[in-house]
Length: 82
Image (cartoon, rainbow, N blue to C red; front, side, top):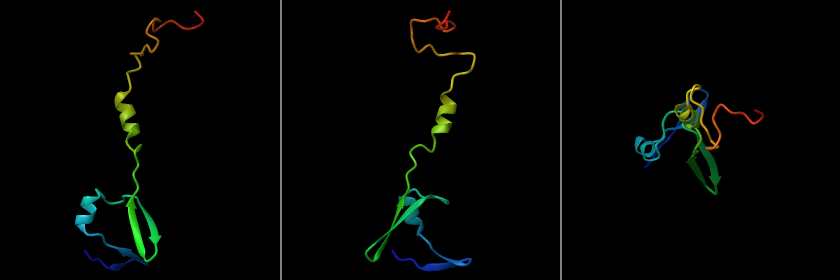
């Protein structure tokens, strides 16, 4: 595969072929790390394993009216000082 450096505003950019983007699951605004090794440029997708955690926690959250009893042997409404 071959590509060219192209002008983008006052900068220069690199267009990646669609096949490369699809094979790495890259979309617009995907984060990449850039490394220079000898006479090569290495681009790697930055994996963000926690990027969907907020949505997962929100989906798993119990309603306020339903408290979870983590101790198992204590009534939910009972406190330590009662």
